[in-house]
Every structure is written in structure tokens, then in C-alpha cells.
Image (cartoon, rainbow, N blue to C red; front, side, top):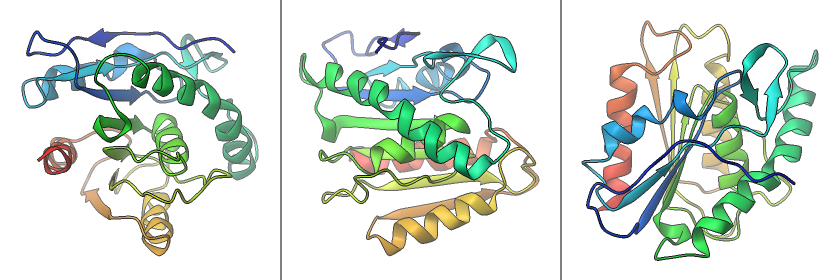
Length: 214
């Protein structure tokens, strides 16, 4: 199994990393697509290491991008199989982070956009260790075999109401499913927004991260 790699930002404090924010990009993009969030959040989380790995597979639909899993004709079945196959390499990345320095699961935040958000929810809600929090931008929830974890992290779901790539109803359904399983879930729908991260959605995610970090 290949190890993930991609852009990283060292803590703004200049000291050793005491937190980690792992950013999982969408289908056809790469780690550089989300590393800008690290520049935005770095001053607010000065002890955090920001890691934005490239997904493990070259993307068939984007010659210069990557995918966590291929798109399938049956999107639901494709997500289930694809998320299950991609999860181990993300778990290995997290375990590598936790094996060195002062970063712990409780000080790790898993953030994803679109297909990366599906992976963040899939992995983060089934880990035996409680994460600091999970943020899903424009995603969907595909439960893992270990779902739900006994010690459940807080989850923020953010979606544009005009998204024609990933139906915003999938985030609403994710909120229902996670709430029913005992997770602390907040849902924000950005009005007039398509498949992307709008300023109000980013502000919502920022407030969520600061609340989990307080």
C-alpha cells in the first residue's frame, strides 16, 4: 500500500506540532487544492500541522489530478466499494502522524471536500480513537464496517443548496444518520451556492474548529 504524500504547512507557532489538520481533496484535484485552508486557519490554530495529501490513484477523468476512488455508473454502490478500498491508506497516514511527536487523535481534525468529504466521514466516524472533529464540505456519508465508533467526534456538514455534482440532500441525510447514531452534528446549507466552498460555509467551518479547540 503506497503512502500518501502532498503539500504540508508547518505550525505558525514555529514550535513542534501539537495538532494536525488533514485535508482530503475532491475527485480530480490534488493536495494543493485545499492547502489554502491551512493558510486561512493557520493563525487561528498556531500549533497545527496542516497536511493535504494527494489521493492514491491517478484520476481517469482528470489527467493531472487524483481520486480516492473511481466514479461508477451506480454511484451508491461505487461509493460503498470505493470508500472501503481507500480507507486503509488514510488510516495509515493518521497512525503515522500519531506515532511521532505530540499529535494525538483528539488533536486531529479531518476535513474533506466532495469525494474527500466522503472519505473524511467514512474514516472518521468509525475509528476506535476519537478525533478532534470532522468537517464535510459538499459530501455524503458512507458508513464503514466499524460505524459507529464508541467515542464519537463532533461533525460539521456544509453544502451548497445549488450543488449539481453532489446532491445537498446527501448532507441532510448524513445529518439524520449521524444524529441517530449519537453524534454531535451541525449542518449548514449555503444559499445560492453550487459545488464549492462559499465564504459563509468557510466561516461555519472555522467556528466549528475553534469550538472544538476551546
